[in-house]
Length: 349
Image (tube, rainbow, N blue to C red; front, side, top):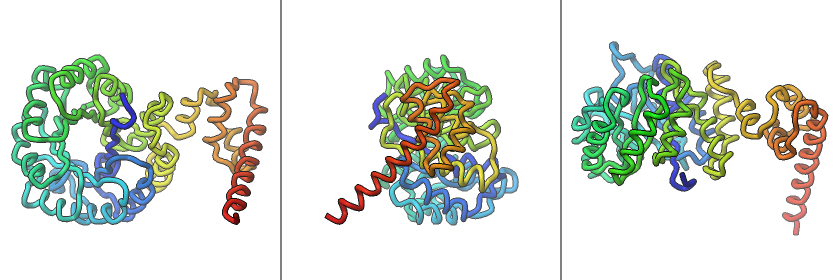
């Protein structure tokens, strides 16, 4: 794994639509995109949970049209690519892909059942002819052998796709299974490989890490695991793990966490997923029970509690050294004031 090769596809505003019965508000899309835009994620995927053209009585009616949602996202994503997902049959080239291109969508994911990649051929070829970044998605990949997945991936590669994303739609895969087929795909294709995990068996993060270790370079997940059923690979956790191992240094983990808290937890009242302080506690190696005292000290000294945890981690504090929390918070506060003073002095010179 190399930092500059790993891409984050954020499907919170697509897969998360399932959790809201596809009633995603335009104001939520606007706020989310504004907050996440400068975090250095690669792409934000937006739309109905089942993709472009899927809004229906049978599947679930969206509160707003595909075009309304995409226009709202496009207006508020200045530095991050805008992506969409489409399953042929729900959506078509003329009715859905062409309008999305006109709106300014950058990245297109075309999904089919894991044994039916030929269904996406026309769509991928069309997108490639338009100079768009197109990826094939093989859904329910637990339902095919690794040899069959390779055969289908080779089809997607022949269509000119930039990459292939394997979707563990039922959250049924185990890490060794992921390692086995991702390794086979890596050794026999020459395009990008991604993994979209679901958390039914609590393996979404582990499976995604397994995919990365075996040659995948695209992480497709959601903030707080927000999504259908048991949810998805939680992006805050996977990014924190990678940064702990000196990867993805350019991604702003704090901004991603802030977006999760402000939009997914507060606005949408979604309570699942591991919370930000728990993640920071994990990557810093500091006892989780320090949380309340860290939050108290952060308020008193007006510093970020995440910074306190990280500093405590550098000092390798253990249970019983809670008195160190105040010292760290005080030092951080003094450093912030000094940095501010230095900045003002430098600006006057």
